[in-house]
Length: 382
Ligand code: NDP
Ligand code: MG
Figure: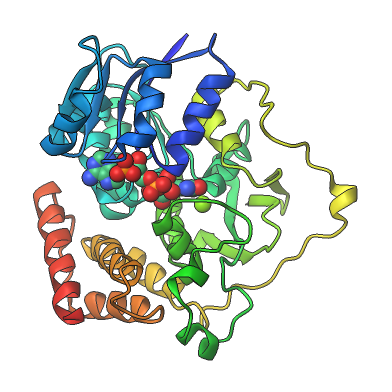
């Protein structure tokens, strides 16, 4: 029996993680869970999975939840609460599916506590990959990818000679606007952007997919997870989202992982690695029915966020922190109806241009740069 700590339990990845726990009650139990403020979604989960500890965003949410729980559930709040959930003494594995760079401290705390981590929270690696990976390597704590592309790459590396990898190819569905021209992109609405053709996900990552910043973040995520230089990381548009990513080796052999698009598969692989379990909730891939698959070069003119991410990643230091924080702030403003779709990339670019890179930033510096960048974007918007 594996005991799990789950951060972001009410979110898209979080609820799918719980769906897997529900399918395999003899394999997994929930030791602790954290969420923000969505009590309505969380309450049935708390009753069903009976975690020992529940962490919420702040005291107000905790007070509202407290009156609806019996005394056997411990209730904590704030970033300290989330950290407590991440390092719960009973848990064997942390699934970090919280949204945004707020997931960084709990990730680091879990590494220090020696908890294996299934990482969905890509912002953590974008903003502070050098710190996270250094500590995880030093302490020998595995970080297993949950992001579908990275899980595909990880699966395609099993039993292989990693020193013979010539490149990895991250596939991209193209998001909600893959067939739109730049002119058309200028006028799209929040509702259009939230309508993803292949995946049902949280709002922020759905917008990231539409701007293609999601691929940008994934490039940096892959750089850290697999310790590969940016020159060996490629992207490819693949509209069907069947080939989840590929690894090319020195002999030009290419190994890929395929499947119907479902986050359940990569989430479960992180939960069971290196074993596999059945997964009734997903469909068999029927290639003869699908017939043909399509691949297309990434268009960085239409989607400059990919180039911005390469630039930030290659520059290194504090630049990826700026990329991530500016993007989080700009996406928030877009979702709130304050800026237009194409303004997202403009504000990110402006933040990158405005920033003087700091080499090898420590945690305090990263937190400061994150805060300053969000303030800079807000100020620019106003
Ligand atoms: P959602 O927006 O659906 O969920 C986010 C979760 O984080 C919710 O449980 C939310 O709680 C919680 N949360 C947000 N802010 C706080 C806070 N301050 N304190 C505590 N909890 C908080 O996001 P997704 O599930 O889509 O994405 C989660 C992460 O996984 C992201 O990093 C994303 O990039 C990554 N990812 C997601 C994929 C997907 O298919 N969705 C695929 C690959 C990666 P509440 O709602 O209760 O406030
Ligand atoms: Mg992904």
